Image (cartoon, rainbow, N blue to C red):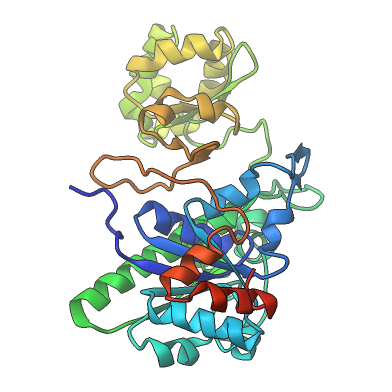
Length: 404
């Protein structure tokens, strides 16, 4: 059974930076052929990103900032403002199943790549748009990034920031909202392809950073709207749940943290006590009922903090292996790469020269097999030859600046 359900699907991607290209990366791991159109001279601006915060990569070699969202694609250098370049694009669109773009409405119109333009040469194509703020409303023509539209406007930043903090919390890593939104868009495209297969009707698929940001906070926004108060971040060091000692963070002897999330504390209290060498508290009436646990949460937190401070994370990891309630070590972005469970499920995979995080969907209990990200315009000639262009015509297109 194939673990690449989109084999045979061709996606024509006219996009840059993180959001929409990450959608294309997911589609490649699902089996699609993704042809990435890059500016004939400068390519995707993401290729020039070599430093994020304190992290800097050697710009002369493989760059995770471009590989993450462009694994497995074919890169074609094309000047869409050049009539000959536009001709090549439309020829590719005629032979594609999906047109995927991040370009703003005015630019799409100017370049002749809006829905009607592409559907004129391929009426059955699925047209997919990734935007900052959605396809409707007075701001639909504006651009944005994950920091603005997803993180800040979608309420994640404010909801995570503790009260009294100057400023707001930043996203935990680069392309955070981009990657989440890109996966959402890939799912929408897959659904549209399924609909076309069933009915013959193509769809226009829209996903925005704002919509994804709001969806990511969907539970919290619905609750806030219902009770009339916003979420506020928990001040570091405070216990997260005021009525449940089994839902919060506990510091270990070596300065690491363990996260407990047991939403039914009466069910798990006795088992936790036995695992942390506090068997005498298993039947303590202060923690016998939901009401008594809620009333005695501060004391329960104090006792558990003292207990967890007696062993290292490695010792607790072995000891808590038989604990029935949900818990996890708090890991940073380097530690997670060594997590045995992450490795067992192949959530980090070799893309042929660089380890990348796999997209989160697996088919038939099989990890995707990614390919490296392409060098700029590396497949231009290959793709043009497949379209039927001969070498004389390819040389003409290069001389005219239409292709790289």
